[in-house]
Length: 143
Image (cartoon, rainbow, N blue to C red; front, side, top):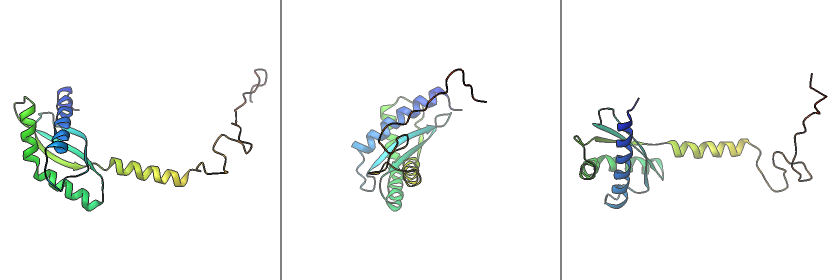
């Protein structure tokens, strides 16, 4: 269980790293990168930065390698902006959460009946009126 202090540090690192990637990092391999979240160890000496990269699998791996090569630069930015006894050692991990959510949405769209032209949506009758659930009268209790 991470401490509140480690969580606050993780959020501060996420802000610093994401701004440094966006504004200051000149590596051409690192493009279309979003820092999704950061996990800081309880002793605050290590931080795992989860990133999402738009593009193909090879493009994603290339961006992660570029970020690993720029880890020293990004650690220097963290040391410059945050007052810490130790600057955490950064490792970068590709976050597949966005990719998985898009895939789940695609599968659900295929499986569930869609709202196509001429086809009533769930809860609508063929006449286009909303279907209403009717409760039985109070004197007629279901068996």
